[in-house]
Length: 443
Image 1 (cartoon, one colour):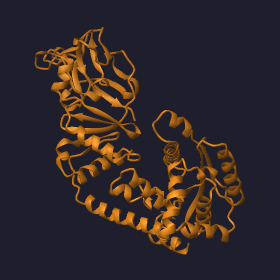
Image 2 (image 1 turned 45 degrees about the vertical axis):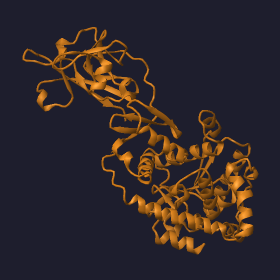
Image 3 (image 1 turned 180 degrees about the vertical axis):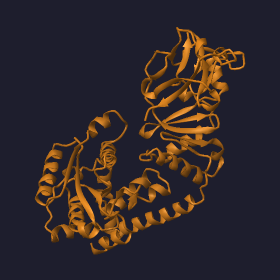
Image 4 (image 1 turned 60 degrees about the vertical axis):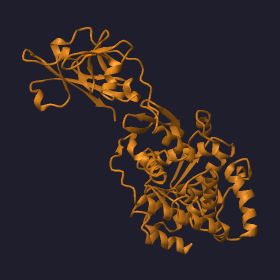
């Protein structure tokens, strides 16, 4: 254990005065990590906080939470107890129970981070866990990244101090320090894939090759080193990264698969959605790049990929916008979850941003809404065009056409917010009142 302590200090894994949450289930591994970090908290200059997540999947969850809470009270360790319904998530998703538990658990950790309650979350994964993870990724068809296994530090937030430590060391540490723990009997259910690898596969491999876990982990390390080399050749500077989407230029998809798949993986990481993606999903995105504009595929983690003109766009399922009709008026007009339509009167359109229109040319019956069948627009500069065809001309992705507010007077579109205005409402030398129109997006 001393080498683990020295490693943490040498690598400066925790910033000074950091609040380090420890994911504690009450089992032998997490209790040993909690004890270890709490024992050395002054030396590491950190505050240790135990975090227990009740996944609502077993009747024992409450007992384990109470056990950890009592232990923390005895040793004056700050304690956070959270409840996250993994069973409910499983019902509404295609995730296994194991995956659903992981999803809600990490959701809790991220939430605690965002609220400033913790700076890091320390998890008790060890060498045997790493070997199991690598084997599971391989049999599921992963590439080098999956075969690399878990990382010691991820996103400067998730930390696994015991990752290189053999399981036997942890068991000895628990005995030597008389650390109490609870048994999780679901760990003996071989219908759970990880338990099957742990209880059926690895013991047979160890009976022939006693050092198999270390060998598998070394293999994972070699894969990571090779993957990092390939990653160093990536220079995709035309990729567009936004808050909730990534746009990948289609011409990048002609590169070798080794580079293209890493391009996709980088996009998924940006969306925090790379978990549960397999080779078949990457293949489907590659096939999409050869399909016509408007094609789409649904992917794990509520990700949708769209073929959009010169790009393949990856984003999460958007909220469905309810049917709305809002009046045209000065000030802010809330338009569903998209944000506020902002209208203000200005004097000099040359120094302002946004669309400009002649207020007096807007009929009193005009309303803000989303597009409908039969809509048309008189293009700026002249010429009438069906709105559907107008969107095609402007290369507006199908994905967002139903979420763009339009100012309509019956079937005539006067303003396409954020895009253009009709020739019928443009400002001219007779204009007395100029209105600037733009979207104030929600945070």
